[in-house]
Length: 348
Ligand code: ASP
Image 1 (cartoon, rainbow, N blue to C red):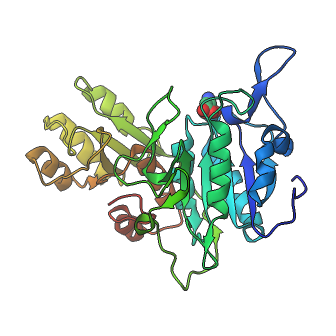
Image 2 (image 1 turned 180 degrees about the vertical axis):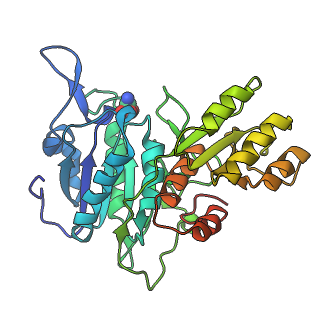
């Protein structure tokens, strides 16, 4: 870990995992390469003016976020846990491609969180003139350090991108080109940055006064999969997907408000999977809105088979919630209870 840059009251740890934000042009080859984040102040001299002590930690090796895996989520969570008491908040720099997955997983893995963990990245590398990375980084640090009456203003896992702070487990990457790459369709932003940072207090999670001490859950189940319905999905394909050895959980991306075909083979496959103990969580393929399994016959049939409504969960939150709940830390009863309720503000 780098030496503290300044000895000031508030302190933030930046963890650089990889991704576009930490790149600059190699003058010799002309291609983009990661720069040494220990020298972030050289790239972003504005950091000195923040009045916040900033330390950095760089993953070795840094990874393109397409390569991220649950094992790395655990390593990342351990970095936070080991340094939790030394900082007011954490900024995780991560590639945008899978940021919503990592940050959603993090929201479940962090137990009794009372400090901000702010994920950010950029669409243009920080070493390029038109970068969006500087603003994203500087504001993410400000939010990670922000306190009111001695308490963190945003004690949540969040994504900050292009002037908006979102609850992480409500986000999806929605644009591959534009600076505003992320959306939170079913939950309002927790803060918006303009001339000042405006916090939407009523949407920010309140921390229990008697919170037990912070910890992380490391056991995640990887025997889960996402099945997206489409007209033409055949019996043999569905059968194969539901008979993957060891399968424990499925996120079923259905149509509209949670609807699926009513072909007997389709319903039989699902029923058989539920009987074999596989948890099936129903989320909608629509970006916004919610599953309502009472609205149509098709939804009601799914409920009768034992498919669980994922309400307005994003696919990213649904799959990581399953990984967390099926990881072995919970009894069957606890899993069933927690699946239908919001445990980290992930569903309405
Ligand atoms: N491919 C990069 C990544 O996700 C893109 C980015 O950083 O935005 O790691």
